[in-house]
Length: 242
Image 1 (spheres, rainbow, N blue to C red):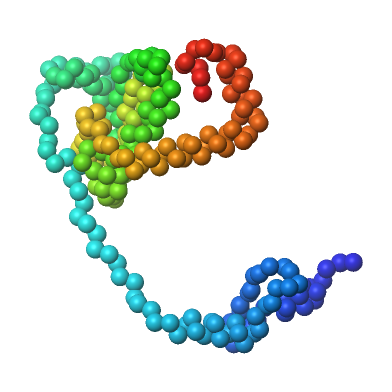
Image 2: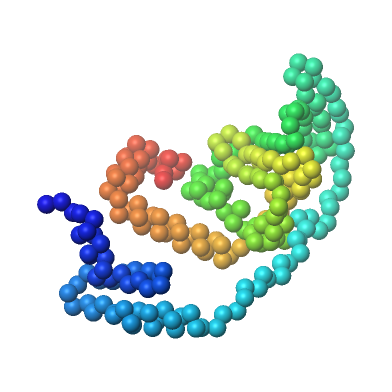
C-alpha cells in the first residue's frame, strides 16, 4: 500500500493543535503508556508563558580596547640597505641582526613571513614528546599582559592575523594585515618573541581535551593497530613515538 497525503494529515491531527493561525507541534515518547496533554492544557501553558513579564535586552557597556603594547621597545636602526634589481626587492640589515627583504605586492595587503633556521632538531630527545604542545599552547595563554579575551578586544575590527610555528627545519612567524595596520602586526611579532603569558585554566582545559582524545583513540581498533605498527617500526627512537 502507498502512504497518501490524507494518511499523513490524519496522523498529524493526533498531536498537532491549531487555533487562530497558531500551530503547536508536540514531541514525546512513542509509547502507549505516555499520556499526551490535551489541547486545552497545551493552550493554557502557552497562554501562561505569554503572560510572563519580560525585560528589554540591555546592551552591555563594552570595556575600552586595551593597548597591545603599554611600553614601546627601544628603537633599533638600519645599518645596511641595498636594492636587488633582479628580484625587485629592497634588502635591509638591522642592528638586531635581522635580515629584512621587502617587495611590493601591488595591493593594500601586507604579508609578513619571519623564519630562523633550527626547529625540532634543536629539541632534546627527552623533551621531544612535548612537541605536540609547543605550537598549540602559546596562543591559549593570550599575549603579554592580555588574556585571550582581552587580546581579541585589542584586535577587534582589524584584519590583522598571525601564527607561529616550530617545524622540522625552521621556526616561523607569519601574518597579514592592511597597510594601515602594519604597526599592529609588528607589535604582535615583537610581543610573541619577547613575552610569555601563563594561563593555568586554559592549560588544564587543554589537558582534559587531550585525555578525552586519547581515550577515544584507545577505543578505536585502527588507532591501536597504527600505534603498535609505529612502535614496531621505530622503537626505541623517541622521535618516532606517538
